[in-house]
Length: 256
Ligand SMILES: Nc1ncnc2c1ncn2[C@@H]1O[C@H](COP(=O)(O)OP(=O)(O)OP(=O)(O)O)[C@@H](O)[C@H]1O
Ligand SMILES: [Mg+2]
Image (cartoon, rainbow, N blue to C red):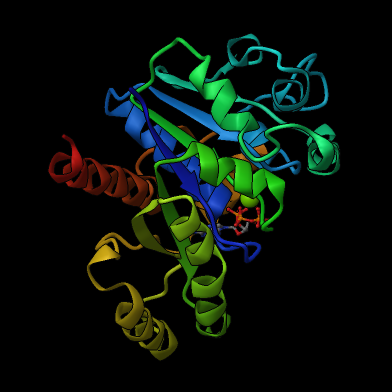
């Protein structure tokens, strides 16, 4: 069975998609077969992996709404062992159409259940909202990875986060995979302060690996590449590789 991980935080722009792309690409480069599911109508994970989101015949929208098989929408990527289930703006319609559908919160899980191909890890990039697309992602997932940006607003958002994503995690019996600091600048006092505060909430669930702010990580998607292909020796690519290794070492304790 695949392990399904939702990358979620209702706050926008905290590094969900950057983490989904680069963690999946790093795991795949370490020989772990991965699928990235793009549950965001912005389609950033899709284009960030080099898939042209405007010329797709079928996308995740068709899987969720018309029960097209997941395997029929999958796209290869430039990384061996990594495929993507792509999305584009069509998916924003699903948020509305799902409301009146049967099993409206289980559509992604049903699609994964029917899906025969075995991946080791399925990583879901969630949108920055708590609508039905995120709820479908959480219902389909076993664990949640929460990226957090080290800025003042992260602290303000902490209480909010515990009331929302955490409420949903409890409702759907999801484990916390881990909390990841993104766009981290170790030189600032604020970053250190945020780390201390967040530790009070999450303690041992925080990854030791912290993703630095680097221009290459921000540039890579516009070339349709994960950092590991765009700038393989750069700090961003190497740190996401470290994260993948830390992630894998933590699985050993979790596997049955
Ligand atoms: N470590 C980093 N260093 C520099 N820039 C980064 C880093 N991580 C993310 N970014 C940039 O910050 C912006 C937001 O990142 P990203 O799209 O990954 O966040 P998100 O949480 O998926 O956003 P949304 O909520 O809109 O889906 C993007 O322009 C991205 O390129
Ligand atoms: Mg995103």
